[in-house]
Structures are given as structure tokens and as C-alpha cells.
Image (cartoon, rainbow, N blue to C red; front, side, top):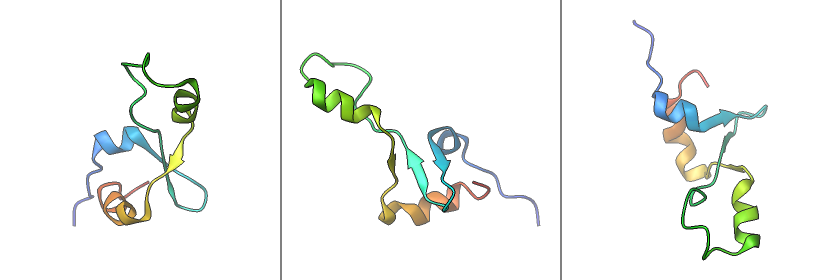
Length: 65
């Protein structure tokens, strides 16, 4: 059986934590920042965990993470 391929786009966006959960960065921080509040932009800087509903699919496309 050949090795499974990792989806490279996903590998660049997600990191595994020590407990095996997936960490991701938040969206909506790249442009049109003038109308967003300082508090909202500050909260977008922080990384967050991937939602449990998506975790199963993410593990499938990231077999070695």
C-alpha cells in the first residue's frame, strides 16, 4: 500500500497540539480593516481550535499531523 498524501494547503494552515487537537488562525484579518473595531482585530490575532464537527474531516486530509 503506498503512503497517503497530505493535502498541502491544509498542512500550511493547521498545527497539531500536544493532545492531538488542531490549531488554526482566524479569518477576516487581511484587508478592509478600517471598519472593524480594535477589539475585533485584536481577537482575530489569536489562534483557536478547529471545531469538533470538522475535526474528523481534517484528520483525514492530514494523515501524518
